[in-house]
Length: 99
Image 1 (cartoon, one colour):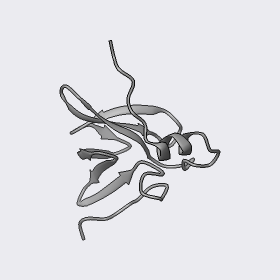
Image 2: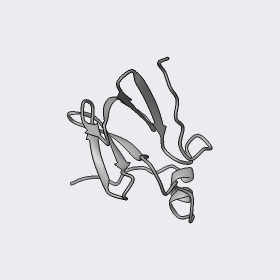
Image 3: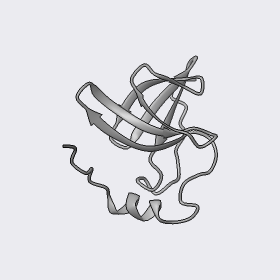
């Protein structure tokens, strides 16, 4: 039987506030560890929530890394880092790691 996941106070609070999550673009909802490796829950631009793992493609990006509270996706030579809204004090972070 699955055990409930522990949810941080910040995430729980953000989940109950209107406007706490961006309503556009890709949004990282959460990350978790499964027997086969790390996975992430991502909300797509039209609202669908998908589970993704390393190597999966979402909205034209390939998942290249997953860590606690962060998802790295790549398209050509550009890498973006998505973070769970509220965990770092921001809605979402986007960083270009390649020139």
